[in-house]
Length: 199
Length: 205
Image (tube, rainbow over all chains, first blue to last red; front, side, top):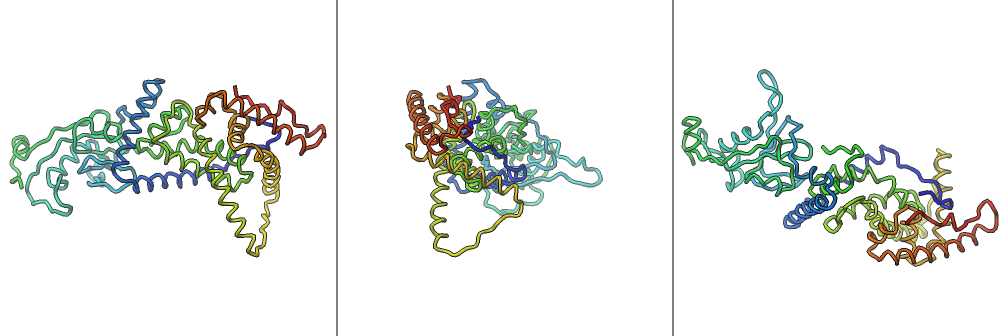
């Protein structure tokens, strides 16, 4: 818009925009951390509602971008969550599994679902267990139903929960779909051989 | 990682941002930063304040995200948030100016002369316009800034400001007439600085 009595416009230098953007994203992350959990949930729902309105009103790419399965693009690590809670930028309950390096390693995690299931199986993740409770060596633990989602930065995130957990958390489901049924130690033993007693 | 390739509509990025995708919100910032920066300059008459107000605008949009339903462009909502951010920034400047008035200080002069001169010239020019604009009612100021200066349609301005479209039309008509008198009086009868109706009329339809 050009109005003759106004002075000419000026653009911010690109590096200044980049700095301001970084500060803004940091602010957003801090705001979310400071927000009570019940409001975080509402905002996730709010995002879903916006996506729904956009999808039904204009058929734009919003719902596609939000709910459509996405392939994992960063296979250098995977996040194994011990509870179906996702707060962007915050510490999470669970563990990050990094790909191994050196001889024999592919340098990437090709199946994050199985990797995280293994962590559950050896007691590395235990739902409801007090933090810091060490697993019993040699024991096999229950593995809950797991589902793979893809984080905005392309990393796989494996959550315990039903197949629609990603949608509930506002995350894209992993593509191809990564879903695993719950297994008990007995069921594991039947398919994988004896491996100790369940705690 | 979200990539802003210029094809994803604002509504799509906004939906992802509300769902926790910070980079989508960052993409929206990168897309609209310069537009909001210039808008804030036109509301404050200061490039420095405009930069602060630009950041405040996006922070405010984020805080209000649950009440913003974006179906097309985010810009009208950003302009409304910018109106508030600019007023807050202006208040802060007045407080600081009052404090500095009581404190001895030396004025720094930049040595990148052309750049500094251009900034100062544009700020002086804008301050003259603002001194006229600020004699109008606040609601009229917003309509002029959004429709005439930024090119929003009457429909877009009406939705963003939460008023009927007829109200936008009447405010704009009243404000243009008043501004024409004020700016013509100030610039005088010289032909090279005449402010006519055409110059005051935006493209909002």
